[in-house]
Amino acid sequence: MNNDRTYDIVITGGGIMGSATAYYLSRMAPGLKMAVVERDPSYARASTTLSMSNVRIQFSLKENILISQYAVQVLDAFEEEMTVEDRRPRIYYHRDGNLFLVGEQNLQAARRAYDLQLSLGCRVQWWSPEQIKAHYPLYDTSGMVGGTFGPDDGHFDAYAALMAYKAKARSQGAHYLKGEVVRIRTAGGRAEGVDLGSGETLSAGCVVNCGGAWAAQIAETAGVKLPVIPVKRQVFALDPAVKPEGPLPLTVLLSGLYFRTETGGLILLGKSMEEDPVGFNFAWDDQRFMEILWPELAEFVPAWDRLKLVRGWAGLYDVNTLDHNAIIGEWPEIGGLFLATGFSGHGLQQGPAVGRYLAELILKQPASLDLSIFNPRRVLENKPLSEAGIV
Image 1 (cartoon, rainbow, N blue to C red):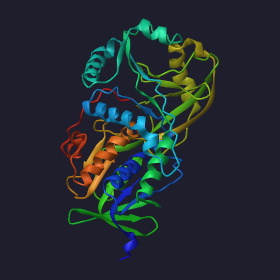
Image 2: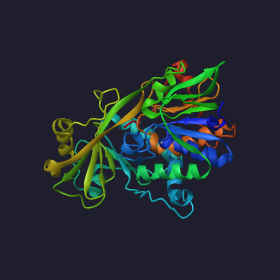
Image 3: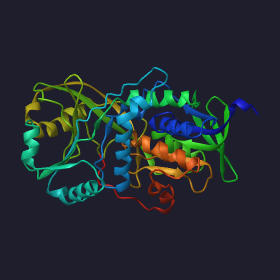
Image 4: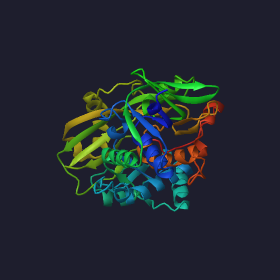
């Protein structure tokens, strides 16, 4: 056996989840021999880099709120913490807020989530339609009963954050390898390593599946069936004729349409829809915007009946069809096989807390934040969690 291909831990996938996990593992256990296998080091089709890079505390499940509180804490000190020698990353964390609109149909659920967020010490505000209009005059708030605004919510440079995690993990001893994991090797009910498309084998007693939209495909090679599918989501960049007076928060309409301002006076817009295609499809469709999304947008912001569609792109959600919440932890039937998947569009903001939690699980350290509610056992037991704040 080639000792250079024997590791303590192999992580499949070097996106935000894999790299955050590698960072925490290498920080907590210096000298750990660890490989992070990434199929595309350019990250051109990674969900991390194709997202709208949002972080928010406005969830309805306690653990999801706590995860985001930790993310905000991490982002505040991120650039200093991730400095390697004299190379300080710049992630441009903009706290422009998130605004979730509330109508009669979601009033009770919004009130419950708001009260829970307040009880956990979140800075979140309940705005009347008049307050929303006062802050953002372009919005038509007719038909609304209010909205919840999180001033600590915002967006940042996802690619810069990913590269910072990767650079810091490497400086702490993690090895990044270009390759495609085609099989998780198991024997006697335990993980033994992975096979690569190149024909090489990496031996390890611990395998962490952070494969994102590919995670279920990878897990199945070990006989693990996950309720996770790759679903295409699209983002459109717009140049409106009428510009807002200042930054707009990520604004979520009752229909599920969401948008925010971007550098250069652009508007980024998206919407998750039932008919979004399943599969590894990265084509974007301007007709979707013209025929469906623009009419919705112009109804809420009448001044945007004139705008230019500048560009668009498509990325993938790893959608957990059981309950749209993350699946995190050791697979009950295979020792040493850990999972972090099914984030359903929230993986970027959950990366810091999940990476730390996985590292603590693997190293058998007390959990700084108990995320056992997301244990994979609920998949086997068919016990979904409830989260009303899915976007």
